[in-house]
View (cartoon, rainbow, N blue to C red):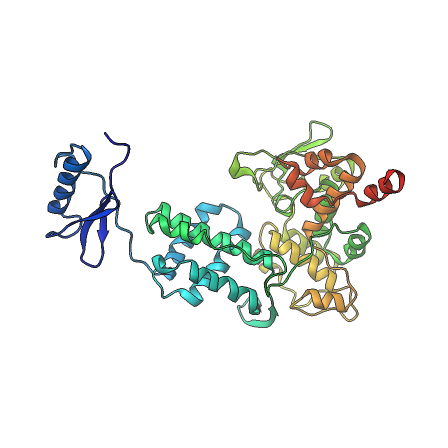
Length: 418
């Protein structure tokens, strides 16, 4: 048998089958595509020209015809499966939903198979050169404010990668032909300083002085979350999902094995060691059922009510159930941003922005910068491999993103031997 045989294909203009063989196209006219007569003609062609003996009782396996679905319908189908795809990664789901919303807004009427490189390039340039609007809503869903902003170049490139993965999923589900994914892969991301997109500086570690300044403005629960993350260098996702059952206190230092973490879907394990300072912070939160979350917004609100701290729009005790059992990475970051806003005189009002904090002379930082600070401290004192071990990275390349180069060491070496 030859190494390959010509595939049976559809000629859409006439709804008939054909094959490409030795540089020529052969049509199976007289019968519609995928009919028994057309398939028999294709089998006769293979038998005559390719030396392939396939009887009608063993027909060739034909590809399933791709469904004619719009881009809006494809987005709906993908988001319906997003919970299975991403599991508990809410932030990843939000990123996919956002780029699909922007895509459907402009191209939702198109058939998904007609969304090609030209459309993707146009979408990329639109995101790079136009301002976006983010609306802020209260718990009732009413719009309370809006912020106009320009997407960062790295964010746009991340969005484009997510959109390609949506098409990759569609190809795997036989909703689109494989060549559509190959075509979209030809579109390059935005290059540094060559587009209208906003360029961002690398995330820097936060100084302890800036962290210590905001601790009195935080609730006791969130303040302890910040302190524990500072000492362990764990991800915000891990600190929010911490449970007593994950901590082994029979050893010294304590061994914390998060049940959910960033690399779990790759089969990787994560082990975090908690030293004396971290143990002192965490110990009061372990006196609860093993599978309850250590850091809870409900507990934070209850403590505030007991201490009599004033708060606007205070809810009655019966409405405490409105608050969730655990902090999410978004609400954890929002709590820190709100506390930073209280440092200004007068306090800043929502919606918050980088420009507002800069104008008030406040150093804005996020929970991710606590991890960067731990990485930098460990690298400066114990080396890059030690930082890799503490952060739980599988490669030194990932650790180098968190811990900047020792420029001070390079300067010292230049003075001595340069």
